[in-house]
Amino acid sequence: METKSILYNLRTKNGLSQDELAEKVFVTRQAVSRWENGETVPNTETLKQLSKLYNVSINTLLGLPHKLICQCCGMPLEDEIMGRNEDGSINEDYCKWCYADGTYTYSNLDDLIEVCIPHMVNADFTEEQAREYLKMTLPNLDYWKRYDELGDGGKFEEFKQKLINEINELHIDGMPKLTKLNALVGKYVNLEYRLPSGLNVKFLDDQVTYLGNQLESEIVDGLCFGVIANMDFILICTYEEEGKNPELIMYKKR
Image (cartoon, rainbow, N blue to C red; front, top):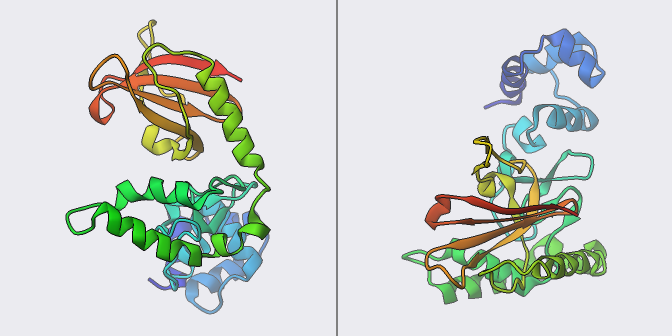
């Protein structure tokens, strides 16, 4: 689809008139009209504003001229899984799992490879083949080539270790010792819990990236513990296969 059609569709989908859009991105109505007639395209700064307003990438606004992949894990990027900068704008270089609110979530390449492997293994791709492929390709991505420049000197890893220690100190019955926290996007782990009051509640934001892990119960076969945490809270729950029968064990403010 051409840029002019994309801009028209996004404006009308969001219920905005040309005048209203012009006011939001600080241009004239005539400028909006010229975009939608294909006479001109927005400049770089205006594209950034439109990207934030519509919650889509600049690549999408321009008609997908580039095939984008995460420059940390190599995952093909679509708008809904792109990482976010600290100001909430989309970062077109990373996925939500590798980059969240301006923070890079992986500092160890081997850890990332172990996280990626289960998502790659299938009938035509063995675990060993996946590992060799990742070892060969990931070091060539921009993040790992520029790690000394982009890394935070281990500060995020220190924060994760502090969280791990806090969670282990809770001594939840039947839950194994936690050794790792991985990046988890809220949409995929936002279970609904039934409270004693009878209300069904979700505690997570689908768009936010958290830290967490899944641990198999040491006491009950087929039962898993789910751990989700960030700077503000620690959530621990249990559930059965495929997230069935979730039960909230603890929600603790930090």
